[in-house]
Length: 158
Image (cartoon, rainbow, N blue to C red):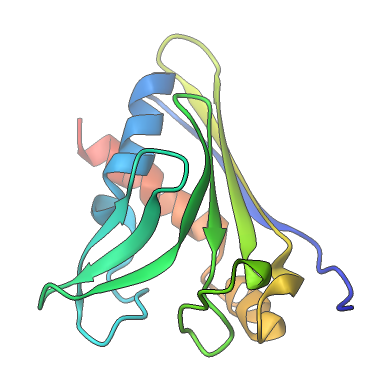
């Protein structure tokens, strides 16, 4: 049994309603997810999160190819979404759900037009090559940096 790794995560507060923040986070991933953060053979054209439990979280390449990243475990708009992270330490999709970590995203209203978004990425030790993934998040690909991109994308979309 692998020792647990501390959860990764981040928090940001955006000037948007709860519903708008959730909708932009889950439905406009392409607008804020870095294009260079892809694992498919082709350059990434878009990131898709299917809006239902069991839905896919995946990238679509510019050539139309698709590469899974994980599955939706919880879909509770506008409060919470949980997805599996099934990208291993070799930056490849691992179809075995026993090797999946989980990304839990919670949205909390701080007023009518202000929302706090909290990400907790846990069970990273389940991944094959877990330490490589963990280290990559700590060395610049952090959820804090991703949330900064999300907040900027949301502000620019107004």
